[in-house]
Image (cartoon, rainbow over the protein chains, first blue to last red):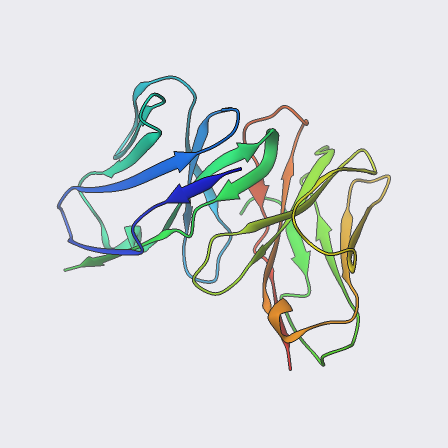
Length: 110
Length: 113
């Protein structure tokens, strides 16, 4: 089976750096995804990690450790528009069949 | 804009009724998955369709059923609605079965009263 744990809510200040952690257990590993979801909107793809290490994409970076069942999403130079839920997800045997965590609601304050 | 459109955007139904939700995938995307997202939770996988055939199902009862049409648009049908079916229903399309990136529609907010 699958299990994903991520913090329910976090608060950070505009311009700061925030790290959102995700721990997972899954039978068979096909990579780990991060999605961003603004309130009332569709989730949008942020990153996909299948190998250990850090993947950087602009202000957003994602890290994976397969041996530890651990990932984090790092957001730098926070902006007010980054206030959203961040969803950690693993594929269920194949892609576009995701098992999602409950999401971390990030509040960015001025 | 992801190019995936869902209709209607909001819907209110009475317990026991039936509902049909629709999803128009991005052009050429032959794979579509449906998810249910309760308030404050992550999306839960309902089922996936690939080239008009069901290709995997999550832990949902048979009263949740679907269709995919030759143009790859899709429907989710829910019979005998229950109050707990109130949620945001999302569809996500991908170009091919093996593609890692899926594009989500904006969802249909279903309220069962």
